[in-house]
Image 1 (tube, rainbow, N blue to C red):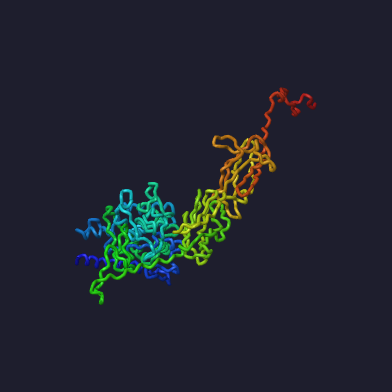
Image 2 (tube, one colour; image 1 turned 90 degrees about the vertical axis):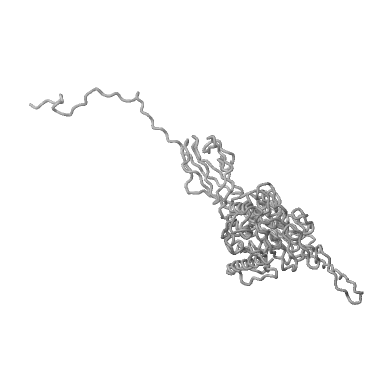
Length: 597
C-alpha cells in the first residue's frame, strides 16, 4: 500500500511539473479577459473560444475526459527500459499501441492530401485520443482497429453533465433516452452522424473503430479552414472538441510530450488512465472507466442500502430509516419547448458552379404559440445529388439559435455539379417539423468574350492558319474560369448553320470538322482553340464562339487565294536563231566602201 501511495505521489509531482510547463508556454497566447466556469469551461464571451457552431455542438458533448498528465521521463525510452513493473509502466505511459499509432498516422496522411492547409499533426490526434480514452483503453483493439469492448461515456442526462437527449435511437450508444459519447475518440451520436468517416476502407463508419474515429476527428478539427500550425487556430480546434480550458491545457501537454518523440508498444499493453475530470463534480464517487455503467449520482447510492440511523428518542430504541427524497424533476430545456421551425426570410438559393451562394439559410425555432426559442441547436443537412458544401467542406452544420430564435447556416459553396438539391433544417434532439430549402447550382457562365490580340487570323487557300485563335471570357468584369465554350464555323452572320466550306478543324482521326463542343476556359478565363486549316475556297468566313450566360463572339477568318503559278515558255513560239553574220561597221571590211585613190 505504501509503495502504491509512493508511486501516486511521485506521479503527482511529475505531472504537476509538466502541466505547469504547458500552461506557462500557453500563457503568452492566452487572450486577455478570458473567463471560465467552475468546471474549467470557457464562457461564451471568451475571445479565443471556438465559433458558436463548434462550441455548441462539440464532438464529445463536453463529456468528462481523463486528466492524467504526461510523465517526466523521456518520451522515447526503450520498451524494455528499466526492470520489472516500473520499466513496463514507464514504457506503457510513454508509448502508443501499434494499431492506434498507425491509425493516427494514416489520418494525418489523408488530411495532408484532402485538406493540406490544415496542417494536422498526428500527435494532436494522439493527444486527444489519450485524454478521451487512454489510447483506446491501452490499445485494446482487434486487428482491424475496432475496440474489443465498446467505450462509452456517461449518459448526458443533465445531472452533472450536459443534457443531450437521444438522437440516434440507441444505434451507437445503446441508450434510447440520452446520448453518450462513443468510441476511442468519444464522439456523441449526433456529431458522429455527420462527422463519421470510413478510415479503414471496410465500407462502414464505426465510431468504435480507431481508424474511422481518428479520421473523423481529423476532419472535425479541420472543418473551419483552421491552420493548426497557428497557435490561435490550434486552440480553437481543441476547444471545439471539448469546450474546457482545463481540457485544452491537458491536450496541449500531451501534444508537446508526443512532439518530443514517442515509441510503438504492442496492442493492449498501454497504461490505463486513472483520473477523470468529473471526480470533483461528483465527490466521493470513483469515476467509471469508459465502457462501464456510469457511477451512481450523489444521494442515490448504487448497489447498497442506506445505513440505518441511530435510535431516535421516543421510538422505543428501534432503528429507523430516513425517507429517501426523490431527485428533483429535470426542468424543461429550450429544446423541449420547440414545436416547429419556420423559414426566417431566406431568399432564393441559387449560385453558379464554383461560386459562393449570396443567400444563407435562416431558420427560426418557435413554440406552439409562435414564440421564439433561443439556445436551440439547429442542424442543417445538405440532401440530394450535389457536391455543394458549407464553408469548410462539410455537408452538415449545427448552429445555435440566437435571442430571436434564429439560426443562420454557414455560407454554401457550390461545387461543379449542377442541378437542384435541398438544405434540411431540423432540431437536434427533437423530432419536430423541420424546414426544407430548395437550392440550385447553375452552370458556370460568361457574359463577355474577347479576342486576344489585334490581328485577325489569315491564311492562304489550302494552307493552315499560322496562329491559333485565343479568347478570354469574363463574367461581370472578372475572369470566367472553367466555362464551357462552343466553336462553330457558321455560314454567315445571319445564318448560324454550320458552313460546309472554308476553314475547318481536325478531329482525332484527322478528318475535317467545323464545330467543336466540350471546350472550357482555364482558371484565368483563357481559351486557345485547336489549329485551323483552310480548304481551296478563298474568301471571308466567320468563327462563332458561344458560352453559357449569353456571351457570343464572331471571329473573322480571311482565306486569300493561292498565288497563280508563273507561265512556262512555249518552245514552239521561240524565234529561230539567225545564221547570217551580223553586218560589219568597219569600213575596212565593208565591200560597199571604195578605198580612196
